[in-house]
Amino acid sequence: MPSLPSPMTTAQLDELTAARARMKRLRWAAGYAAFDGTIIAVFAGITLVAGFPSVSGLLMGGLMAVVAWIEFRGRSLLTKLEERGGRMVAWNQVAFAGLIAAYAGWCIACELWGERLIPRVLAEAGDQWPPETIQMLDHLKDLDELYPHLVAWLYALVGGVAVIPLGLTSWYYFSCARLVQAHLALTPQWILDAESPVNNRRS
Image (cartoon, rainbow, N blue to C red; front, side, top):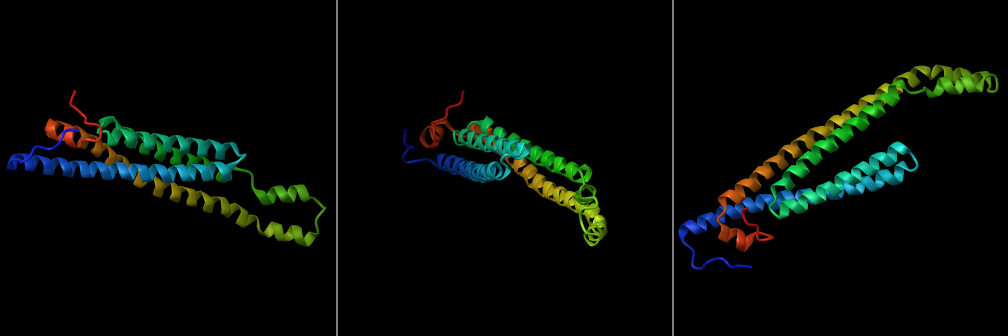
């Protein structure tokens, strides 16, 4: 790997300081992408195990695993100062937000329009249960009607809380893609040769 010139002029020192400041921001972004990918991968595994053999659970876990893989891939490209790495993790955050929103919407629909438990139990019980038990269940009908709405609001809250930070993270990664472009345009080749992870050169 080429070494830095010595001694350096004041202009060269200023260029080196500015380049290192940009690289520090890009390394932080790459580190955050690695952390984010790890968290998503862990939750993907938990979802796959907890959701088995549910089709929706397996599908959600599998899609989260794909999101985690893309996050790691984008992080790898970002560390190599490839602009598409920043765009990849940015769009990945958008896709993840869409996935969470779609899952929350599906759960809300299932809760609001799915079959109610207590009416089904009463219909199946018929005259087999004591009148006191049937009367008690009949009193719980109002609660059975309220419960899906409470759960639906909970899913809406969780979906909203998750989507907002993912949108902000996506915006941040798009800015990192622009930073890579600016870094390669503004940084002299001797700094790129000496300090870039893979000795990136302008094409």
